Figure 1 (cartoon, rainbow, N blue to C red):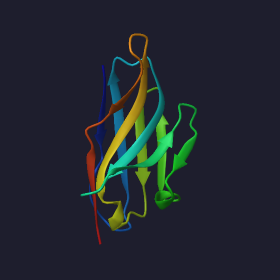
Figure 2 (cartoon, helix red, strand yellow):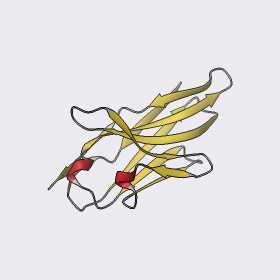
Figure 3 (tube, one colour):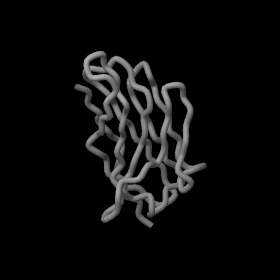
Figure 4 (cartoon, one colour):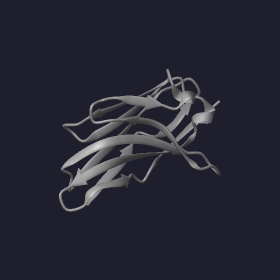
Length: 120
């Protein structure tokens, strides 16, 4: 069983920055794709950014040029650097990872979320 734990959320003024982290632990042989999602109050959970284990990244248009996703494979940690934050970035941010083990094959795991609030 794998666990993902996010951290780094908080309250920030518009135009500010935050760095989110997502640490993976437990029974992990390898992690392929990892991603950040967010869910604003009253809305569905939406994809923000993805990164493959080779480092290829992709972003939703609304965060391009402001957010940077990265990962440290040795540490099993995913990051999201968020700059020039806007009030519309306010949401709970979740990480997910496609984790492979010999027993289970590839399964998707989610973290518990970290709240980001951007005030104007």
